[in-house]
Length: 274
Image (cartoon, rainbow, N blue to C red; front, side, top):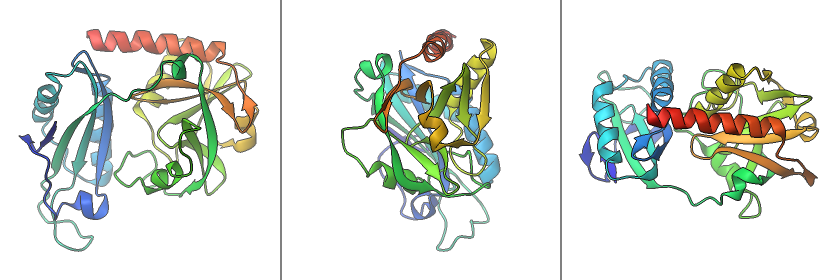
């Protein structure tokens, strides 16, 4: 099911700048019991991204109505909410009057094995590097070719790939943010010149603060990551996946990872019930 500017259809005008230039943003939102999970946080990030890219933020009442409509018959699924700058002529200059395109698409929930959460996943380092761009760092914009190329490096033997940037700092997974536990401190890569500030990343940082778990944003090297006591990745659909193997090294599903996972499950349950 797809709504484009509130209409049930699956065609987009050929002049849309999202198609021509990736001129837009998106949010990936889990749906549970017909409810978009952590919707407040997703819309806050979308609004902040609109301010950075100077795309008019839609009327939120209208957006909420469209999200409610698409969730009506869904017990569990994934929404991809996209916002582009709308149509424009050839060339990078944006039109004088911007009329954004809203795309709300409902997808089936991915059939991930439950043991990814309980026993962990196998990960690898990717050869593809993330570029350096402080202007766009943090944004979940529509230009994701670096992740597309990185994800093409393997088939089914791994569940996630970790990406470094051109400074050789480990930044994130192809579809996730990274957390490293070392000496009872949780580290997550600094997102200042590369990477996406995921909604789940922000929630985990909040949970750590609430539970007096030391957490630091830092520049992480490949060597530091490999010397971790525990590793896990996160996004808004998978929640948390511990990493059990990386570069032929094994890692336990450790106590801090388990503590954060339990706290996240409680936090999520309260959000759904609200």
